[in-house]
Length: 331
Ligand code: SF4
Image (cartoon, rainbow, N blue to C red; front, side):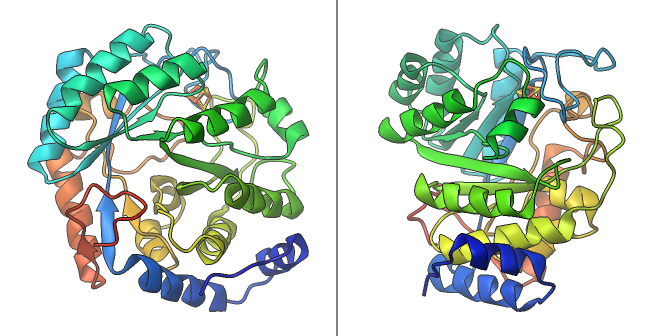
């Protein structure tokens, strides 16, 4: 049974410390999504970004990052690794890097689709025409986190960016037939509980197919370096509420959750999540893709990451899905 909550209800639950929420979310996950966990192989193919998001270690003004772009061959090698590890979706994730024109991305998508796997893009805001070209080339999903629906906060965190354009991008992606993933950061400086409740309502309103929640982790090379606080519990609460409101969507147990809490991804899987994103990026580059510090598995090979997470999933009685993990795939 799915739930309906008013904004006041959501605020009250977010402020409470009861653990019943997690049990309910786990029950709903089981009822709607079964015991299967979908794996998405993450390929961080460029850490070059024209944006300056205040919370992000890859922001343009951070000169302490060793920048890289993977070649097409290097990206396809990561894809082959994912396929070898029986991962049926890859997520091409990168900064907003203008080197990767829509033609380059479309050509890459076509090559990846030859492996008969699903392709998710996570490359930031693009025009309607570009999204259309990606869809035509065979991309299945697009991940674009709204980060916060508090417009003032959004503006203060994203210099020169437009909140309205981001929302438009999400609607454009939906209209083109992508499965759309979004999400927010929990625990941002000046973020209220009320605005988190509004984030949750927004995800439901746009009928997101996937929602990822990341606890805010301050990066020492960003303007937000002094905001240190562990936001794991609140993030878990937001995530569990999303499961109650949107019982059939895909919800990842994010790596950021594990960065702030030992075994954080397993705790998340037991509190409503049903997706894990093992890192398939070449280990020589992974340490340079540091959106936030303390990232897990930076020295582990793709094989080791896949094996490790599979055994953790099985240890809690869950199974690895062999499907491509669409919203309607429950096996
Ligand atoms: S969050 Fe994304 S868009 Fe913003 S600076 Fe980091 S990589 Fe660039």
